Amino acid sequence: MARILILGGSGFIGNVLYKELCSYFDTYATYFTNKSFSENQHFFNFDFEREGLENILKEVKPTHIISCIRGNFEGQIELHHEIASYIHKRRCKIIFLSSANVFDAFSNYPSYEYDKTLSESIYGKLKIKIENTFLNLSTSNYVIARLPMVFGYNSPRIRELKDHIKRKEAYEIFPNLVMNVTTADKLAQQLHYIINRNKGGIFHLGSHDLIHHDEFIKDIAKSLGYERPLFKNVYTSNFDRFLAVLPKYNILPKHLRIESHEVIEHSCARLKK
Image (cartoon, rainbow, N blue to C red; front, side, top):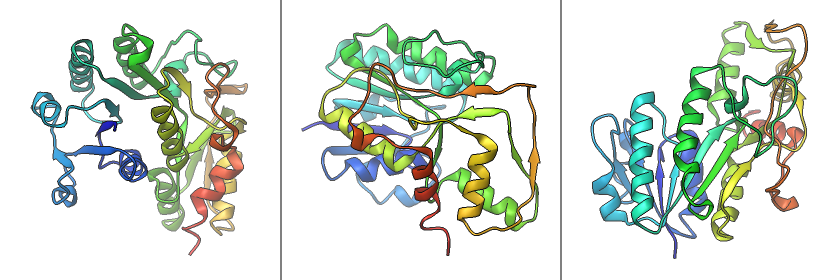
């Protein structure tokens, strides 16, 4: 049986992954500030800015490490170098959750798995550095999962939108941004499949259709039952700019794909009340 270690298991995405995988695999995770996980013997307290991962790796002996950790950028780089060194010496696979922002310097078209990465943002540059750490490994030892904006019924993005509307504050929308989206639940199902089938390489795990940011957010607000929310249009260019990761080579089965309207439905279904 696979032994999985989720770094950042107390976060929104990490916890959804843990709940999806723990019934099928021997699954462990880390937490930092959320002490509610301390009673779960499969969770380890871990502060990557102050300590290495060596002790947890010795105890868990993972066959798969899923990294969705957040925090200090330099600390993240050092942590992932440690993981790469571990994989060089042992039979283990890294699943690194990357971002569409590795392509944010390209704005004229969507991006596919083997397109050149180039970013203008600090966040995108961080993700590229970490990706490059693992691209030196054998393809069988890594999965780079590039994600668009992630939503879900209890996602931080949905809660932020609801908070703005309730406080009658304008929420920023980007009419010229063309993107794709996903939910944490669908991502967890996709990674479950990738682990089961022992897949490797680069995966773009967003919706198969594209949508403008302003249209998507307005549709979510409408689905949540808000009639006249305040929005602030933010124009970063005079033309449409793309920040979307679409699959061309590593395409998953139909039941694991998602479209933007499904993301809206799943994000709002349990919050309408």
